[in-house]
Length: 249
Image (cartoon, rainbow, N blue to C red):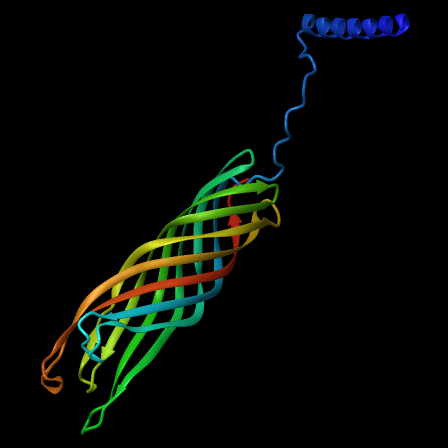
């Protein structure tokens, strides 16, 4: 037991002597190792391209029962299409946390026509509603976790887009445009994988709610001159992939 205590005391004395000697020489004493920094650097300006799938939903509310005599939801339909465009952004990395800003602008090919009523008579056709969205843009913040060359993130911000909505009445001349450029909210999640210090690929899912716009249908002599109020609401799910190029080192 005495030998064990003597050996322990000798070891402690040697460690203290080494630390004192290091201090005398101006050398740092050895202590706990700091956590290693991530090997991958996500900080910097980047730009890229994206493409994917969009599912757009349009809800028409007939506030006065103009078309079928009953107020309420007139049309609630979804359509699928292509979405593609480009994005630019900037990231700041703080150890394993990454925050950034990103803006994108995209072409859309989502459109549909809904046939409502059949009418008979000279020159009469059927009521139709045409819905489409030719473009969509977003400006979003990103907050993520960097696991070396893998970035997992959440994103949110605002979206803006051109919503084209048209009502064709009982005669082809009864065309009323309810279109508008809308601004709403967007959010989602994604993951990005670094291929090398400059190139990366990503996949993300977004939900955009562009809100509603209101308009008045004003009939003419062919429709008895009646008018009606409508609200049109647009939402969209987006699933897409992309590629980014980071500028600088």
